Structure formats: structure tokens, C-alpha cells
Amino acid sequence: MNKKENHILVVDDDNNLRELLIDTLDVIGYTADSAVDGIDALEKLKDTSYDLMISDIKMPEMDGLRLLQKTKRHYPNMPVIIITGFATPELMGRASPDGFLAKPFRISAIEQLIEEALAEQKIEIRQQVKNVMVVDDDDMFRQMLSETLRLNDFIPTSVEGGKEALKELENGQVDTVITDIKMPEMDGITLLKRIKSKYPDLPVILITGFFIDDNTISGSDSVQADGFLKKPFDSERIVQLLKDLSPVCPPAPIPG
Image (cartoon, rainbow, N blue to C red; front, top):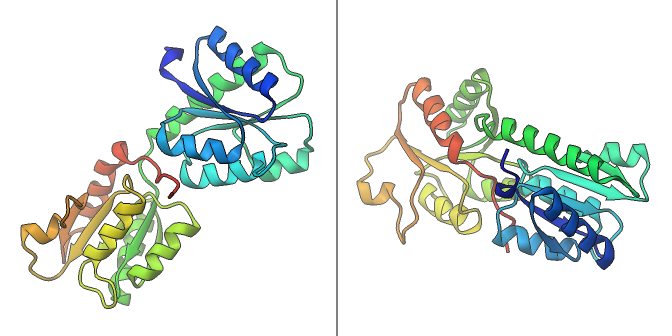
């Protein structure tokens, strides 16, 4: 493993410990940046792609546990290691980080923990997308497609309209959205634009039972769908399309 290829974010309001960790990671061979607190970390996560985050728990404004929750929600494939001198087993079990170090710790301990977390991350990234949102005002079709996805080891979430879809995206992890184009209140093209403006890396597949020209499929204003299927379609086609999207399906960034 070429450690320099792995970019790590260190979050701690203690200047001395933060600088010590950065220097330690540099000596070990990793590339590292620092953030002074949780809010600073979230800003850096929006601008830079990191392979792992190391965060203290006790910080002002936003503590490490809140930062962990927000990070896991929007960057589920990025491991987070928690370091602190104030934690109980019950607390850490509830937080569910990818690793935990109690202060003070040895360099060898953090090096091993980082290697294990990054190894697990690579396994996770190679897996296909799991959480798929189905958006369609046709109850029967929505249920049938959800069942098809479930039988093929996906985890479907179904909603009947665009407004519900946008609300659901704020409440939990979604890897891909499959949406009908022709829907009341908010059509699929409008939903596509809204999703891409807030979650530009989240794949969106458009489906329809009506004739749609190429310009409509591609969207407008440089907003393009990541896939298109015309009803009726074989279940094998949607499953294959989801698998094809998997290698290029990073988690949605935290909206600004």
C-alpha cells in the first residue's frame, strides 16, 4: 500500500495534539490535513476528498460524536477513528466509529488502526450500491420495482413524489435514485435538477412509460441523468444498470 495516496483529515481543537498527529502521520508516510473543530472539518470535507478522518470527541461548537454522525450520513464509506480521554464503552458502542484510541496512545497503535480501517474501506467501496430510492406515483409499479430490488439484494426505499424524495434524502443514506418522469406536483426532470444541485455525485436513473426525446432525457442546463429506462423493462436491466453505476457512486456531499 502506498501510504502517500491516502489522504487523512485530523480534527482536534487542541493545537499541540493536532500538530503532533499531523507530524506523526507524516513520519509514518501518510498525507494529512488538519481541522480545528467539527464545523471546520465539514467545510474541508466538502472541498477535499479524504480517505479517513481522525477526530477528538471533546470539542466546542460541534463535538466529535455529532461530527461522526454527520460524516457517516453523507460519507458512509469514509472510516472515522475517534480519539479521546473521555469515553465509556457504552458511549463508543452507540457512536460506532471505525476505530477508537484512548489518550495517551502509541504511534504503533494508531498506525495499525489506520491500516485496518483503510483495508475495510477498500472492501466496502468494491461492493455494489445498496440503498436505492424509488420515486413513482404509481403505487403498484413502485411496489413491484421495490420488491424486485429487494430480491436482488438491494435495500429499497419508496416514495410517491419529488417532495417526499427530497425530504427522504435529508434523512438518510441513499446510493441511487430511480425516478419516474411523469409525476404530479414535481416531475422527474425537476427532481433530477434539484438532486444534482444539492448532491451532484448521487446517481439518478430516469424511467418513463411515455415517449421522451433525447433532449428531455439528458435534462437541461448541463444536468444529465445517469441512466434511462423505458417502461416496461426487464428486472435484469435495472439490476445491471445499478451494478454499472456502483464503481462511480461516491456518497453525496454535505449540502452547503
